[in-house]
Image (cartoon, rainbow, N blue to C red; front, top):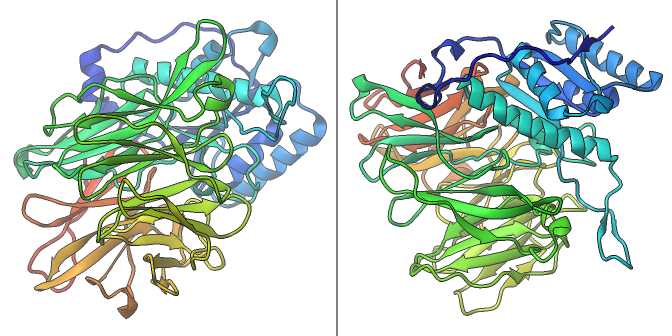
Length: 533
């Protein structure tokens, strides 16, 4: 049996003021996730990577083959055994009826999800047609069509109900055994909690309708405001968050603009937050290294960025040819052209950071092997140097920039253990913590009983936040990890508040912000109970 995703009466629209303030009814609501795909077989890897306790609603196109149904039913049975719940039969979409976006929107209003999971809206090419020079994509067209309709519907749904909806698009062609965090087309930020120039904290996260922000009040008693939807272009559901040398927050993402003829233009864009809690500055386009062809430009990977010691912004993306392209903007605002670095074929997983002695470094996970490449430039006038012989073998989705200057963290592909490496090191240092998935965040210089320490946060078993620490500059001493809190929709983040305390933030499965603060003067590293905002 299945449920029809037919048209029905819509709920009343929520006002802009209500949208910016968020929906007070959202706190504590069930952790519903809508899996919207082209067919039952497409749902299998998404069902398999859902954690225990998830409430899963399934949506796909009508007309599935019996073999697809059996594969899906087996995945559902296995998910139920590990504690997932399926409230009803799948919803069916009817392509012949047209308006897939409207059908999906109706379903979302009925499901009321906090999370939406779908497929890759812009799968990468497998070949190029020699005559037309256009990319050849082997993925069935229905997969991309459903994914694009799902993104539009999720955006409209969030604008209507005024509560954040977190969207994940599973990369086309990914190993079915890989978990969601390892093959997301638009990755969530690791450093999404930032300290402003006035000492107040802000949290920035991508959602279906754009970037939402939570802002710390001027006093602890005042609490946090948000989630507030920030004005901006139509963004894909990923975000890079960067703190500039002047203390401003920079938000970097991919925008999609519908063309008048056909297709869509995809561009790298960024905006700056100059004052805590105030409106963003204007969104500025950085362009696309494959802008000459929208067919190629839509495949662009997600951007990462860093500032060098002179305040020059460097933006990196994986281009159509699966190498890396970089563009720079000087402090005076002049933008250079895109420069293709060539060399290693890379996956959509890059990290960039300034070098301690000047210049910029970028580490990219390899596309075809369990390895990584290191690219660096001594200054903006020097040529880029590539080094493929680095001892970094990252598990997909685990690369991150460490809080210490010039250091990279990753999970070792062979064991999932957290490791740390810096340019020039002959071997990485293991930090334990093989439980969980995804990147590691943290801060350096935390005060623990008078000692300067690096505090780390990562996903632990079952998605619960794991916290660890080691003396600054001495990761070789080892890390003792301890789990705290509840499962989170996003990787945990950390920053310092105005009193120098470490603050850890997560987002609960109900979509609300959770915050814990370091208790200074305590015996060891202790935190307050988690508070919900």
